[in-house]
Image 1 (spheres, rainbow, N blue to C red):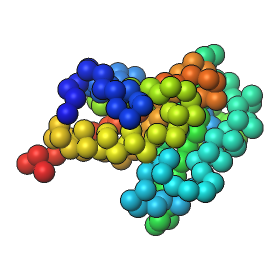
Image 2: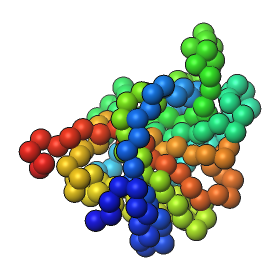
Image 3: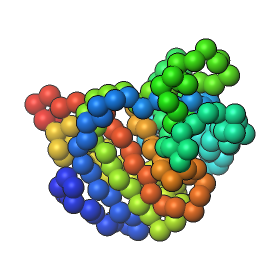
Image 4: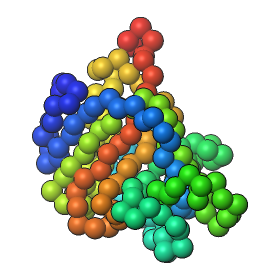
Length: 186
């Protein structure tokens, strides 16, 4: 098991875990929709059309209308929100200044990466398509890593992309995982 701040190369991907505290929240505007949650299968392991990919496509159709921070981060995040049983809410957005996020413009969904402590999984692959294709492997390894370190995820899993749009040919992202200590390290 890899320690914090030590890169691990496995199955064609590079993972590195570290603890970070976010002192100020990060604001995003974008789109959200529901997608059917399938227990036991991680993203990247499901055959057929990717519902989150379709939500990213919706985002790319409106990105020019969002007053985002130039070269700011993009986020894709799955969380319960108001989703009915068997579904999850998936938000895709661009980083914006707090005053833009809090404006009365209702054309876009809002999401905030809150101030708190996170385990940040830095994740690299040979190319962007390989990064997305091995997302399921990374998530499985991350759940195992958290368990082995006496931690558990706390509610949502934001995928944070850098260097402007994730469609660019880069192969790096971070998963910012809010966490709690496991009771009795179970």
